[in-house]
Every structure is written in structure tokens, then in C-alpha cells.
Amino acid sequence: MSFIWSLIVGGILGWLASLIVGKDVPGGIIGNIVAGIIGAWIGSGLFGEFGPVIGGFAIIPALIGAIILIFIISLIMKGTRKAT
Image 1 (tube, helix red, strand yellow):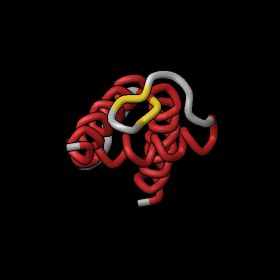
Image 2: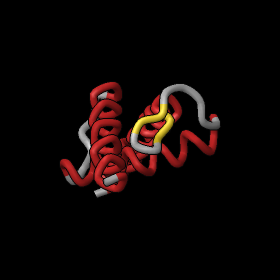
Image 3: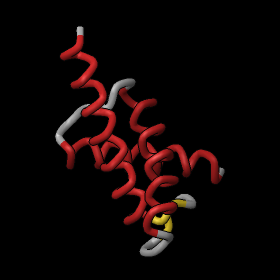
């Protein structure tokens, strides 16, 4: 059951981060889940684990990490679109 919670929370975090950044994540729902989970990993690595924990993710650093990840992905995609 914790795996399902991790997927749900990861998807919500990825979706919120994409709303904050103003860029869509490629891949739809799966992309949001991946961005949320990888963002949680980045955020906990950079900022530690503080704040409320839901589904195994410290929400505040996970959201910040997902925002960073989506911003970097949008820059990379913008650069590749310009090159072609």
C-alpha cells in the first residue's frame, strides 16, 4: 500500500511543480509521477528532510526538488527545439 501512496504523492508533487513553473511535464501522468519521485530525491539530497511527510516524501523539499527538475527539463527541451 505504501508503494501506491508513493505514486499518488509523487504524481501530485509533479503536477503542483508543473503548475508553479508554468511548464507541462512530458509524459502526462507518468511524467508527473516520475518528476515528483526524482524531485523528492533531489530535494532531500539538497535540503534534507523537513516538514510534513506523506507517502514517504518530505513534502517541502520534494516540491522544491520537483520544481528544480521541471525547470531544468524545460530549459533542455527549449534548447533542443531551438537546435532543430
